Amino acid sequence: MEQPWKQLLFTYVNQYNQCQIDYRAESQQQVVTDMSFVMERSKRMKRLSDWYEMRESIPLRSETRAKLIQMIRESDQDVILDIQLHSKLYYSKGGMTHREDMIQRERLNFIRDGFQWVIVSIEQLTVERHPNLENLSLPNEGTGSFGEGSGPYLNAHVWGSGSNRRPVKYSREEAVAYADLWWDSENPEFITFTVNCTNYISQCLFAGGAPIHYTGNRATGWWYKGYVSNKEWWSYSWAVSNSLEYLLSTSTKGLRAEVVDRAEQLMLGDVIIYDWDGDGNYQHSTIVTAFDAGGMPLVNANTVSSRHRYWDYKDSYAWQENTKYQFLHIPDIF
Image (cartoon, rainbow, N blue to C red; front, top):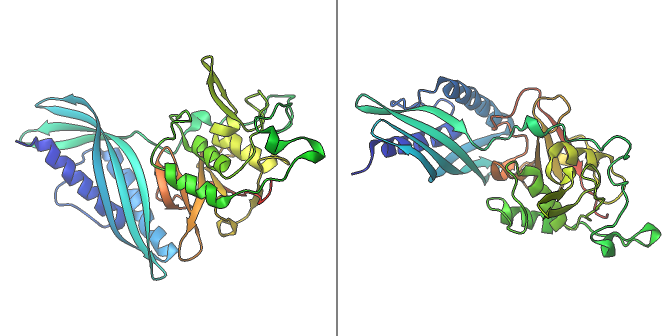
């Protein structure tokens, strides 16, 4: 016999789909009693309605598959479990139908209330706000700006030295192909971070031909060597949004970028970095992998794994009115 809480989970996923496409969607069965979650969801749903109108887009349907990740506790009175929600959202714009994918993980706490079961708390396990990492940003005092450290360079045949360095073309197609291949899984050749967004973007840039600049100093250059003798060997710019933003916007050689004013100026393989609080500390990184019918960028990301997601992230619980963006155009030639 199927456990009653499993039917409740089915109802919750159905409501999740409804909330993705219609902020007025209401269920006759109130399954979530976590009022903090309910209020935050309500705010998000209203914002999404305005957001779609601003984009001249119409949400069509949401298809979400729930997968049990971990059963933490199960009894006759309560259940605590972790689930993965893979959503496929379809919307129309300019006569075209677009699809975006998103994978999130949540911890749900069910309790039995008399003859009924309810969900008393919902915890987001994959979030896009990571303030604890924001201060790993600048080079150590006295070391100069990113890219000025001494060698050696891991790919010396590409980077070279002085006037003998060979120009390297940035392959936007290769960067995007890598982004689409690994958006929902982890390349086993690399360490996966709990906060993996910038590690993923760095891998995409490297797949597109961006030259590694190894300095041996974690606060300078842009490099990755994994764990060596149980020691972390990667630069902050490889794995931390704030540090990658600093590198891209200030470096004058190797991996670098031009800061542009508007999202529509970006090309495939370019990067957007997000400052949720508008205080100058960047906390999330994405890569442009497609464009919608209006020519606006769609992005891929990790941590909350996303594919062809609309660039401004107003559908994210991390987004705020004072959120700022850094639009970074990667050069065609390094």
